Amino acid sequence: MPLTEPHDDHLPQEDPVVLDGAVGNPDDNVVNETSEASVPAAQGDDPAGRGDAPTVQDDGPTPQGDGPTVEPEPTLPEPVRQRIVTLTAAVLPTLPGDEVPVPLRRVAKFAPNRRARLGAPAIAAQLTADPLFRQRVTARVLADAGDLGAAVVEGTAPAAADPVEVAALAYLARPRGWRELIDASGAAVRAEADSAVVAELVREAEQRATRAEHDRAVARVEAEKLRDELARVREELGQLREESRQVARTLRETQARERKATELLATERGRAARASADVDAELRRARARLAEAEAAAGVARATAKEARSVDDARLWLLLETIGQAAVGLRRELALDPVDKLPADFVADAFAEQPGTAPASPAARARDTDDPARLDQLLALPRAHLVVDGYNVTKRGFGEMSLEQQRKRLITGLGGIAAQTGDEVTVVFDGAERMHGLPPAPRGVRVLFSRKGETADELIRRLVRAEPSGRPVVVVSSDREVADGVRRHGAYPLGADSLLRRLARS
Image (cartoon, rainbow, N blue to C red; front, side, top):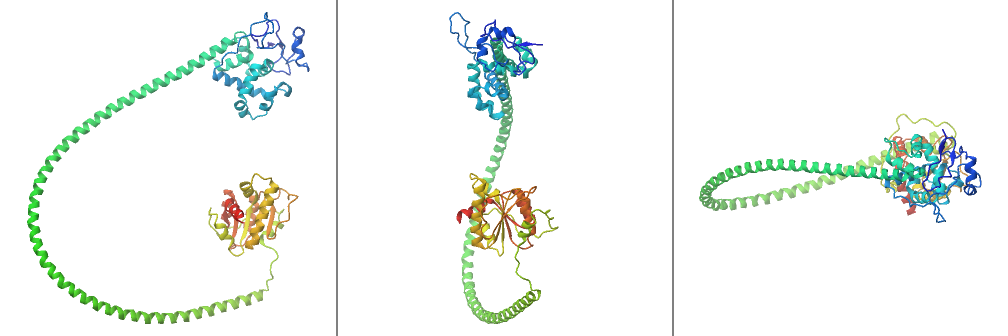
């Protein structure tokens, strides 16, 4: 059924625009010939000749005194204003670019959750100042509203409809009596707010009454307790008076006994003086025996020192024998110095299927977040430092480009390799090797994960390739990487420890 354009009280009644098809779809609207003939000025504003261009201006001041009287924009309740902005922001990206006003073209590119929040002032101002833009928005909003939009266009509001939604559609569509719909919505919103305030006041009054009743009950209980306590205190006071009389009698008896004890004390002091003289004599005899014991201990220490010297000589001879045997074993096996390290084999087999982890790897380290541990671990003999490249660079100097991040990290690791002489491997994510990389410093190996493999998996392959017992230090703030390499016996450290070490270099 064909629906007419939303009615606006500010538009002349003799210039309606009839739209065929779904309400608000600008691509399917067809303007009647009589309408096109009656509004040439509106067609001049739309050089492309689209049927969705409105044929009359809305809410603008009339240049002649005999035109329709322009009423000011109504004051909208805050929920209605927010709903109008939300509806406009939702349909803003669907409008063709040349139909979006210049102030809103940047807002149309915002994310949906930011468009209504950040662009609300500009959207509200444009809806008020640009009737053509409002009518285009209205066409799409009414199409999305369905039956409710059709009812609002006809000037009626279903009883079960949300008054805020009805007021927002009425403001955009502006049918006959749209101001009354907005006023009714404002009254409904205020009534809901007043009802909520009254309900809150009633709830608070009930809570205060409940608390007062509870306080009265507590006060009654406390009064009963105080009366019982007073009776108990009076009884205890009588007992204390009786005890006080008994204590007085006991004190007199104690004083008499004290006089007798003083006499006995004088007698005992004489006996103690004689006993002290005996103790002094015994102490002198004990000191003489102690001197004899110290002399015997000195002789025993000398004897023990000689025995320890003999044991040291025997131990040295045993170690020398073991060293000679190790030299002979190395000569018999004739092992040449190796040209490749375990990590080199992982790099050579870069495109091959990664091997499985050992069944029960030996534990090499314990997790620690202390940055000072990096220097201690690098001081271990033949240590291997493995670095999660982008995890460190994005944490330390993420404001640089990826190429600059890689260059800075590789240069800093070259200094560490030169200072410590340790093997250093840095791993980056990347299906193919990056072009334009500078030559790696001596002692630094640069690896990129192959296609279908992450840098974390490549790091675990490097750790599994190392022999049990070799100190392997993995620098990464990724907890999954740290837990994985710890199970294979490596020392996981955070990225901050390496960044501080590089800053100190």
